[in-house]
Amino acid sequence: MTTSLIQWYPGHIAKAEKQLAKNIEKVDLVIEVRDARIPLATSHPHLKKWIENKKHLLVINRRDMIEPQAVEQWDKWFKSKGETVWWCNAKDGNGIGQIKEAAIRLGDELNQRRESRGMRHRPVRALTLGFPNVGKSALINRLVKKKVVASSRRAGVTKSLRWVRVGQKLDLLDAPGVLPPKLENQKAALKLAICDDIGQAAYDVESVAIAFLKLLCDFEKKDIGFNRGSLEHRYGIPLENQERNLHEWLSNTAEVHTSADIRRMAQKLLDDFRKSLLGQIILELPK
Image (cartoon, rainbow, N blue to C red; front, top):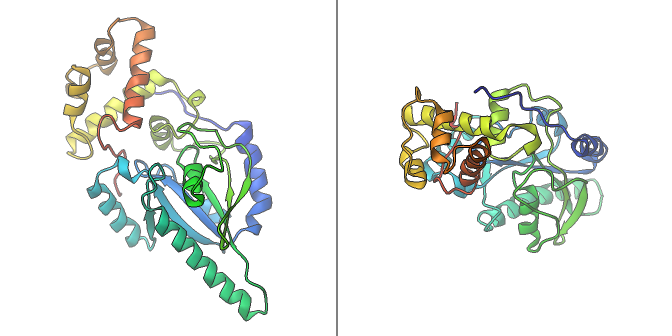
């Protein structure tokens, strides 16, 4: 089975991009949030154009979902590109304090320049930007230390822009997840679907689950990011080599071999990965 074309550009995202165009000039800082499992696939191709002449904080969320060695590899890779990465887990708050301090430092630099021009100090205005479901709203709630914006582990919860005050030095603009109108890179789109960083209406669950298994097989051959034992232990079915019919593997894993049960098992496989029940699996490594 081949993975069907993955495209998703609902009306609220199109509307949000129009609102962003009107508000981007009002912000001093862009806090870009990416998914640690797929830090390249969650990089918006238009971001550099949008944030020209703005301060930029690159935040990679869900650090807990990948192994420490992968974090080190990505750190080195981003540094080689001249970028500093701020890692966090917005779910439990790890790394949030450092991100807040970094944003405030950039605000202090801004206010020093304002003071030199005879202007008053004001809170730094920061925009949180990123793909759907990468944890932007959860990050804001952690920064504010209370639930001020809706947050959920599914794409499309935030549908409009909203300003939130974080103390006296930082104002945050929470924005809906943004996607390109057309996903040209379908390999990246597949990873978005696997990680639930795109609306489920964009893809077929069964074909994405099969593509996920194929990706795991590739990773095992390269001896990176995956141990088949986690699958075999959880489901009691051995995952054989790439030549095996993976649709058959899903069928054998399901208790009853009907199309509905296969689809249910495909959804369970993806959900288990998304909850880290299969271990700390990364789907991308530095190029």
